[in-house]
Amino acid sequence: MRTIVVALLLVDTSLAFAAKSNRFNIDLALSPFMREQQIENPSRDDRVVREVGVVTRTTFSYAFVPWLEAGLYVAFDAGSGERSNYSRPAADGTATVVSRSAGAYWELWTGPFVRGVWGPAFFEFGWSPLVLRGDDGRADLASTAGDTTGTFRGNPFIAFMLAGGARVSLAPNLELKLILQFRIRYLSSRGGDALESSQNFGQMHLWPYMGIGYRF
Image 1 (cartoon, rainbow, N blue to C red):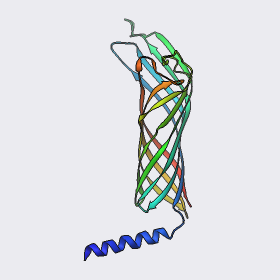
Image 2 (cartoon, rainbow, N blue to C red):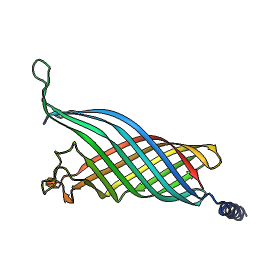
Image 3 (cartoon, rainbow, N blue to C red):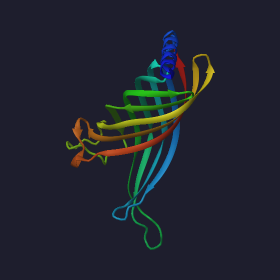
């Protein structure tokens, strides 16, 4: 008897949902950032990385049922970075700059994603078969053809996005969204050729976003 009641409730919920027209959703979110990272290694020079920029994400989704959406997401990052390699400190405690590179960069992600919704909370998983990056400050990452200025391309097998967040209603069909997103990717080629010595340039990022969502 309980099974029948639950089934009837699910059918009723699905029918009520099917009657609604606002199954489509578009989200726009961004996050400005500034970071500094020092990497120490006993077998080579120390490195200091400084970056400043903005990360953005846009999603287009369709709700199949109240708790499941799927669609396309696009992430675009832009900014500038500086990488300085320092020699090990001398006896007087000072370090010498061995090399320095700097320049603007941009990075584009796009791919399918799914979103699970539970009340005001939601969770997302996405895969990015297309990841592109232009970086004027990474002449140290050359392709097998010697290209140090071309566009990087990501390994399509290692490019994923995980996110979770909450939504707050602002007006009919309009929501404020707070999102925490984790991304991982490896760049494996530049200018159409594999990176030198078959190396992969990998990064993991955790970004907080604030944005708006609109349903129609």
